[in-house]
Structures are given as structure tokens and as C-alpha cells.
Amino acid sequence: MKKVVILDYGSGNLRSAERAVARLGVEVEVTAEYEKALNADGLVVPGVGAFAACMGGLKSVRGERIIDRRLAGGQPVLGICVGMQILFERGVEHGVETAGCDEWPGTVERLNAPVVPHMGWNTVDAPEDTVLFQGLGGARFYFVHSYGVQKWEMPPSDVLEPPMVSWTTHGTPFVSAVENGYLTATQFHPEKSGDAGAEMLRNWLATL
Image 1: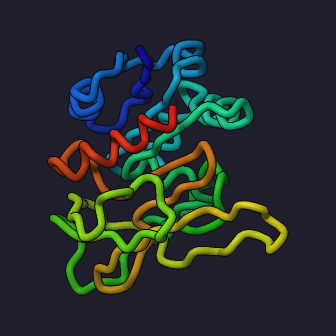
Image 2: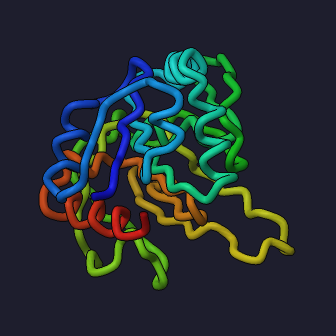
């Protein structure tokens, strides 16, 4: 049986994520233990709250090192909500800039929308060859966030397999998911997205 660790770094809906993944027939553990997080078949990095606080919590458990080492070894990582945002180069909240994990170029900023936070159900415009959203065309997912990446900085043209980027519109378009080899992330909460979220998680688990 595959083993998935939900990284406990003081942020995120840990138990709801644990239950959502466990229902799909894999072994799940919520832990901050370095070796367990490093060696699991899959790692989920959740996140709720401020970018700076999440980065501080991640560093307190050496989470950024865990992510780097897993990706270098071809071991899948899934970021959720702020757990996706901290994978980008930087976050800016209330005029304060905080360095992220810098796995992808881009800045997390306040959404340019008439109503913030973006809270509720919305669709995702995913690439045709997506793995994450296979069989989920037109499905709606649950979002709750005030910040996001609204400008995707394309990687160099010599990158053999550029990331697959999905978009959602709330006021203006923002990045709602990224599939980049062993690193995957969603701005929405699959664990709160009913059957569509469960199917998306099942698609991710199939890559482990």
C-alpha cells in the first residue's frame, strides 16, 4: 500500500486532508518528522493563512529542504492553497515581501477582484494533456483565498517539459494549479471539493 505524509508545519487543514486521502485507499500519516516526510511515496503540503507565517512554519521543520530533496529524487509533492503559494519565488502581503521556496518564478499578490476573498466554487481551465484534471472537464472546485499568482513567468525556451498551468478567473485570471513533473499544486482545496476533489486526488495518487 502506498504511503502519503501530510506535512505538519503548523498550518493547513491537516485532518480534512488526511481523511480525504485516506478514503482513497492509501496509508496516511500527519507528521513533521523529517525522514518520514522525505521517504513517503507522496507528500502533501497544505497551507492556510499568511504567506510569511507559512514559510516560517515550513522552515521550522526543514520543509523546504524536504521538498527539494524529494524533487531531486523523483518523489511526488502536492501543495494545497498556501501550500501552493509558498512554492513560488515570493509573496507580498500588506507591503511586506517574503521569499518563498522558489520552485517556480512568480509573485503571490492580493487578487485584483471586486470581491476578496475569493470564496466558493469555481471552474478550472486546464491544459488538454493534464493528468490532474483528467475526466474532470467543467468540474467545480472549492476556493478560499485573497492572494494568488496572477502573472505566470514562462520558463526559458530550452526547458524540455514546461509546467502545465491551469487558470481560474475571479476578477482577473490567476494560477489555480500547476503540474510540473514531480511537483504539483492547487490553489483550491481538493479535500473540500466533494467528488471532483476526490477524483483529482485519485489522479494525483495514480502518479505515485
